[in-house]
Picture (tube, helix red, strand yellow):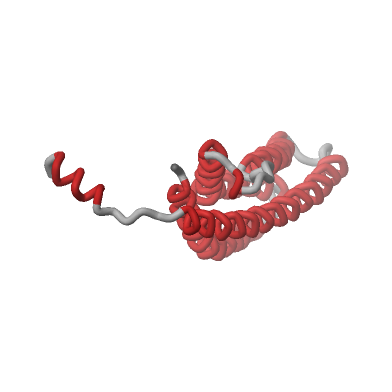
Length: 195
């Protein structure tokens, strides 16, 4: 396509009126607010769950540290560390700015786009990395605490735990597709508001 064809194509594009852009911004502001509220509730529940799990892990450690070796201690410590790191990553994707999109500049829209990109990374990459590392920590824990037991007990516990984590992962995988679709839709709409 030469320059004249490109110029002609560009000039024939319909112009959006300011009213259409304002409606789009209002609609997008509402969607963004709903999504952020949902993300906030999810992060709060996850953080509370992590606090409860950490309390339980510390209690187990205090009670049984003398009975088990290094793998026991390492598995509990790595599980706590994983929860802290994942909570920090999840909260980083949350948008703490509560500005109104109608009054916002292109910088604010670009900031929102960065947050959406971070949320996309959390959903599509970091959750899976977290699940694999958590599975490894749990397997190390099971290996250590079932050491005195039979091989059937050890491998059954590992198998049941692995199956449970796979079921949770596949269930979450379905939800993740719809969340990614919502993020894609918001990204597209945000990019339309850039001047």
